[in-house]
Image 1 (tube, protein in one colour):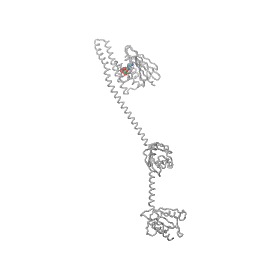
Image 2: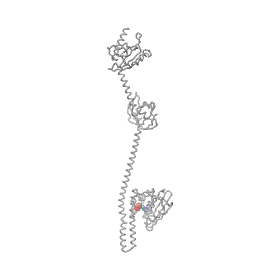
Image 3: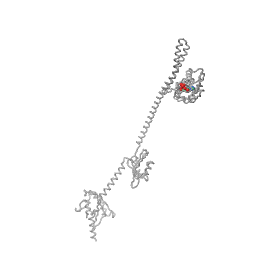
Image 4: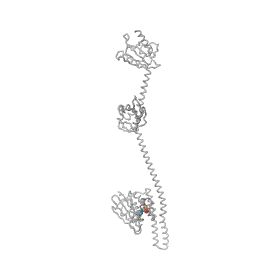
Length: 509
Ligand code: ADP
């Protein structure tokens, strides 16, 4: 039975595809099977090597004897093995990586031996090595990715990993964020992204990104752009967040927007200026053509009078009729004055339109002012007409003397012109604490109700004034003058009963 067993063992030992090596505590090889010889690269038919040290490189000796001593001294638990992985330098051609699986010692004829099973670990080792390398490669790619990234467990939003760029950007250490809920470090996703993530299939790039303000550890707020990829790690869904700091970009965008707005504003202003210029140009052209039309009509009467009177002056001068000569000279003078007035109206309007009239505020005495205006106005009164004026309040006022004088002469000359002979005109100036109110009232022809809305329009003349000399410019000029003084002008009128013009001027301090 024992012989049979021995034979079986011998056959197993020789034919085993696994290498078997038996050596004693000095490393002396008791036996080595062909498979082991082959693995160590010494050839099946070669003599058995003497010592295990001859089989493995010197660098493994210490480790080998460490293990062997423990096994020989029983310090290792029974049944446990130890494996030594060696790069077999003896088998250079194949360059194998061998595993020496050392078992508890065996006793043969009172001697202790170590039995080592030798296996070719090259494939497995390479696989393991490649796996480790690939793991390291991807770990490094994540760690040193120039884009800040986080790996988040989807179920509880806990941070599983964070790369260097993220830690640098937010100022955290890795252990300060690992295991934390993203919300605790001020990170989240927008509602829209949340929905897209919840609806997305596994392993999916989310076609959406959030832009929001996040606070980093130092308290500084930065603008973030956050995008997502869903992945499965060990069957658990994770989100990879890529975060970009777009603070500078946002600031630049803001700057660009601001300068665009400014540019747009400037373009609008320039366009407006151009439109105004164009409008002014149009108005000036219209004014010029209206001037030609009005002038040819309005100039005809005084020019005819001048021509007729000049002829008569000649006739009467020959007859030495001084009285009649003087009468016609007066007519010539009045006609020339009328022509001058019409021309002055056109020139005033042109000056105002061009912005060339600027208020020149001075203090003056109201009584002197009223006296001057009265003298000029009275020279144009019709037969039996009179102007009654009253002044109340402070007699020293601050205003533009010339504008006020022209305005008054305009209103008074209208009152005279549109009232019949013997009519009474009243002129009141009340210098109150906060404003000056001036009224010019007459009992003349009045303004027809339907014409009243257009009375301040340039060249407008009411239906009932067509036979009376005029250009329709006076009230337009007056309104512009009053606007220059920041005042208001209004009127009340009833046809055939009379008209009152009321001015309200603010007090200037
Ligand atoms: P003009 O007197 O040269 O026609 P204005 O601009 O001074 O031009 O007046 C415009 C129009 O307003 C006049 O043509 C006239 O119809 C009306 N108007 C102005 N003042 C009076 C007034 N005191 N009474 C009646 N109508 C007036």
